[in-house]
Length: 152
Image (cartoon, rainbow, N blue to C red; front, side):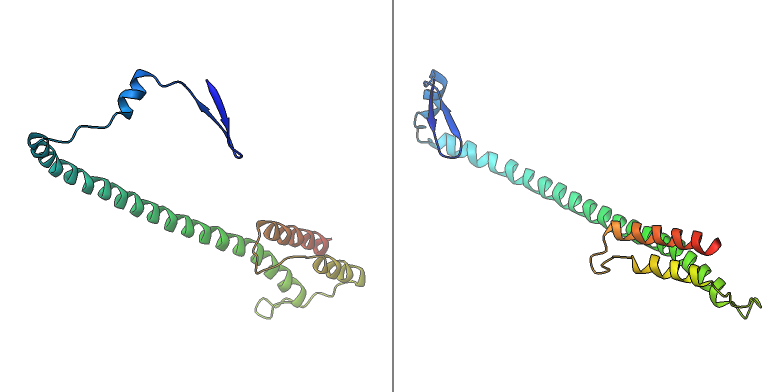
């Protein structure tokens, strides 16, 4: 066994075996009977080709359906996140601003509480264009902290 080195990867070569020599021999030219036999085999090959194409088409359609389902799942998850976190923000706004329909007067925050809320919000470092999962986690964490600050 010898090894010939290529720059990218070594190539291992072995002595030719009788099987390798048999494969390397030139094939004899086909006779009329062989041509007729290969022509008879052609419809079988043509019959197999659509099945492969049908399978590919079916699998492609299945992939499209799964991707659409995944997109719908993402939309549902984002909607649930928006309802959860957005709802908490709306509750905080309602408690600070008050609500005329519920005859709830506006709340007056202390200077210390208002400064803590502003500091917490100013610490938010997100890029809405990138929409990274860590940004959503940070928003959820800040809303949770604001809820604790305002409830104290």
